[in-house]
Image (cartoon, rainbow, N blue to C red; front, side, top):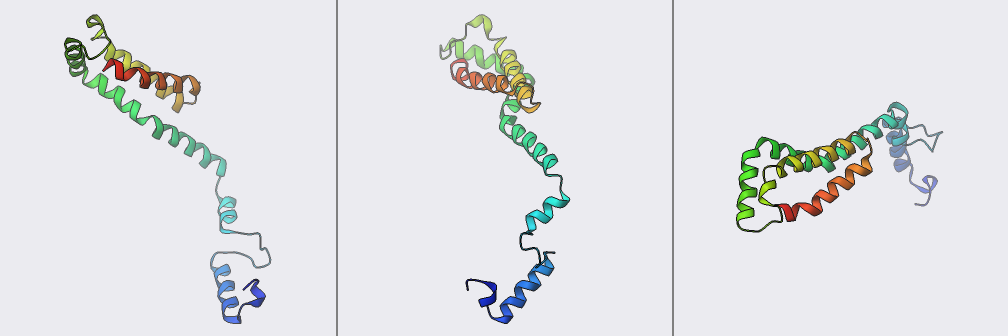
Length: 138
């Protein structure tokens, strides 16, 4: 059916009942469920919260890795020492004790910059540089 006038009376009555259930006014055809929700929800506030949530989701892996570097510091240093012995990384032996701290600092700084929206571009650059450097360090 091309319009509601072409539909059988039973179908027309069903659509009118649906409109009443969803609080839509037949006299206002532009009214939709989304516009009714938007009238009662602060869309800007929800958008801001979703942006922060998305930033957290994107950076949570870096935050977890930084936390792991700090909580398992001795294991990280031992792993770095073993990699230096087997010459599988480019870190000098004198820096193996410092690299977990550098890793945690770069990642934490990047995460804070992105999530707090304080110079997020620099935070993203720091995290991307760490991603590029990481395979050569570990």
